[in-house]
Image 1 (cartoon, rainbow, N blue to C red):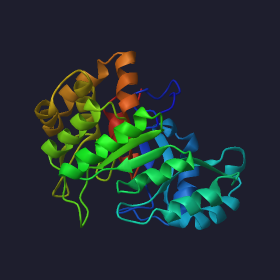
Image 2 (tube, one colour):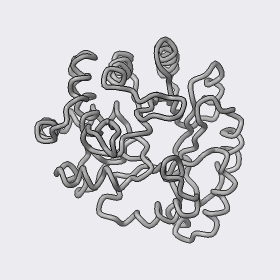
Image 3 (tube, one colour):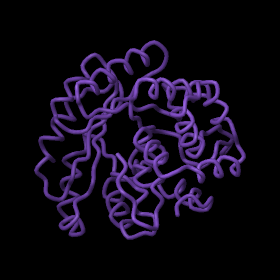
Image 4 (spheres, helix red, strand yellow):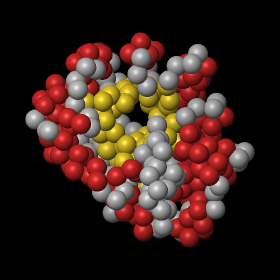
Length: 283
């Protein structure tokens, strides 16, 4: 979830980008990821960065790395534990048991894929993120997650915006459908995979969604725009009109937007932050 921003970072971007350095395509080693994560704490835009995302299966390695880093003594490493979709959830329970009392690690939550057993993870009493799929499974998953929220559970949903060997790139209509579905159900959400740039475009010959487009589409969805309208916003490639509309949002509108679009995971956190700062959105 987003946190209050210091004066030099806009509330629009506070805690927006979770650090997924150890995941593809970055694939940093955990010791390097921790070193770089801690080293960025005093950067000008450090408040834009959320927790370090770590596979639950790497909890033991994380504990060892953290034990060797004195920078984590006074300020523990914020860590989100990840279980990829279609993977067993047992490593998440084991990781929480191992790290919950580790003084140099602060667990911010766990992330799992939607499956028939995902509700078991609610028993961890940590914020939980549940990644949904496509089509009918997505609708069913969103309905289940919304029901859990209604029961006062701290749970949000997640959607993948980039391709994997088993997941096609979701086009504008597909992403807009997810955004509209989450907004309709009153669900907070995060995104993962593929949001490396500020503006929708073709990068290295591949289509990629833009985080500015998603921020504005979320705002417009909260104002009542439907999925086709959101798809049109996601399709825009000119930065000026998108930035102008975002910059014109009121404080209340920004707070409402970020309460819904909580964060997204990126393996190279500085790439989108530098682009957002260049567009004037970080201050």
